Length: 325
Ligand SMILES: [Fe+2]
Ligand SMILES: [Fe+2]
View 1 (cartoon, rainbow, N blue to C red):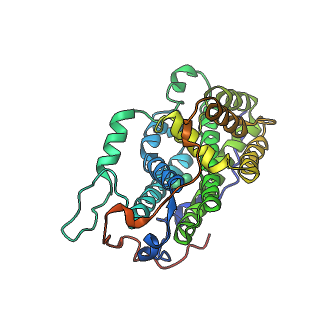
View 2 (cartoon, protein in one colour):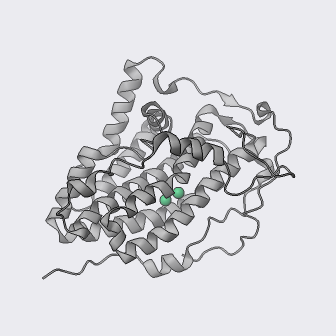
């Protein structure tokens, strides 16, 4: 007789409270006043691209048997909406700073139509086509029970969300821009809820099923790549990892913390995915001169971008109430 799957996450509360990230406290007009390093700007582009790519990841996820689970699809419906607004938040931040590459269409008043950056997203999606390394799994594992199979995607999602929010914490540590810090802290609050859902789903499936534990361990060991791999080149992924986590003991400790959290899930004891990846990235940078742009930081002043006046974004203006979860 099948045991019920008990998931320790208040989905009802999450669904009722889901909304776009509240950025009403950001002082948009002051963003160009503080300089960002090349590395900070690289991270912001990377984060913007990955957040905006979530809908393609969702397409791949819904092509699997995960789509049969009403709890998961309800979560995904709100999750993808929240991720869209994360992408728009980074897009607006970069524009307020004065960076718009490639050039994008503007409305007559100089503001930007929604969704922003259509040229960039179109190019990215045409270039890469599919979402992640899990695309072949449905056919490879055709006979596995749906809920065991879903454990792979849920744990994969948990690792992605945890890596993402830890990356945002690392960018707060590396950068020195008060408005960027505010923005990242607000986005991190959403990512924490996303991580909590995925981990609870994965844990529930893995606690009750030895098959699920084995499957997930196998998939992470054999197929896992850092969030953004596939959308970004190997060198870009390495550059982000080294910039955010390879700068000293604090970054390495953040990687280890991710690994410890993953290893606390039943079946994943002893795994060190993130720290192993960081070591490989550092090895590549050590053996290939110039790889991943490992060099002293250089500041890009906002004034160098040629934009004298960037209108403040308006789509965060109506947000007032702070969500209570
Ligand atoms: Fe996000
Ligand atoms: Fe997220």
